[in-house]
Figure 1 (cartoon, rainbow, N blue to C red):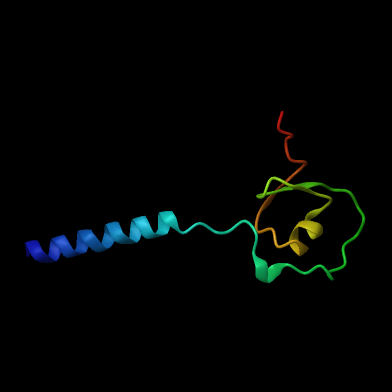
Figure 2: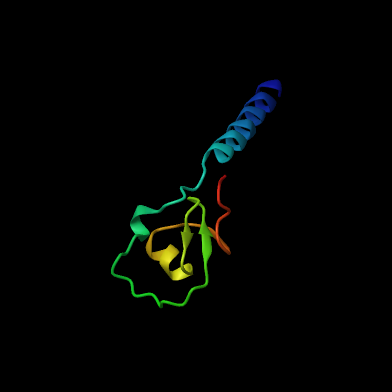
Length: 76
């Protein structure tokens, strides 16, 4: 019984730590598509890489996996 409880606890902790350390990369190389057509409409988004893109389409074609609406804050 104690052995089963130990193994179960070990597996649960292993799963927790493996999920915690598996971060999604900011740029997905497979999604980079410089030939993708985007409009020139300026509706800025801030990519997870800290770069401001003209709109969400530009961020998507650059392979950015997540972004927020608006320009990135400038570092001073």
